[in-house]
Image (cartoon, rainbow, N blue to C red; front, top):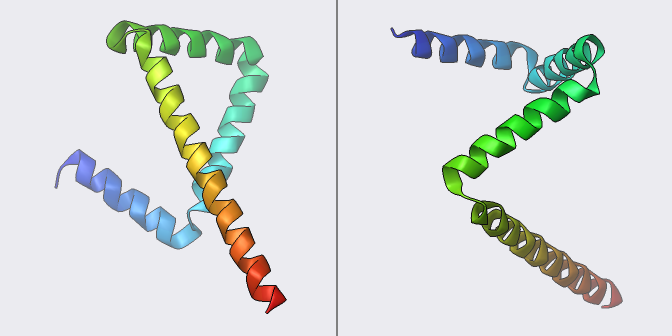
Length: 94
């Protein structure tokens, strides 16, 4: 068994035992501890570093492209929600 397979097996066992919310909880605790130890500026700094690396790797147009995709998805989700609400409203009137 590889290290990766063992890690996945362990992670699956923890998820099954404690639920998927367990990971959210420990992540939140770890994030708070890091913020308390290093300050908010730490997150700003690593965010900027990450953004620069992504820009170097994919180019500046990448952000425009993913922003457009995200905007289109939001637009579609809003349209679907409005359609669903209209259908429910029609059903209630019957």
